Image (cartoon, rainbow, N blue to C red; front, side, top):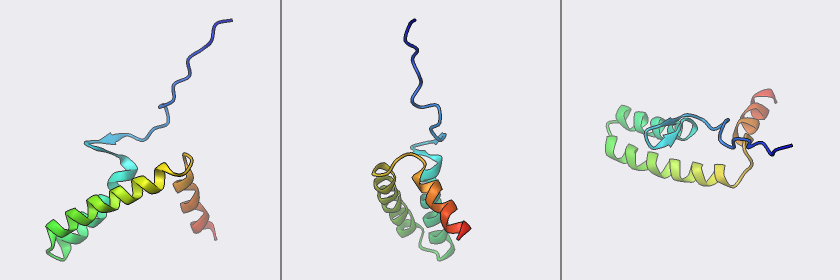
Length: 76
């Protein structure tokens, strides 16, 4: 029997420009908040920093951990 190659990236989220779909949410929230309070450039800067911290949080945990934590907080 021949070994079968199993793809590792089949469940990865879609990519939008530079980030995956789950990384773009904190950036968009910060950017839109900056637009609402008329502080667009600081909102962009905070958005980039938020993505950096979110990426660090996500990469240090197993796949699906963020969704698991979100569903756990909703159910309690």
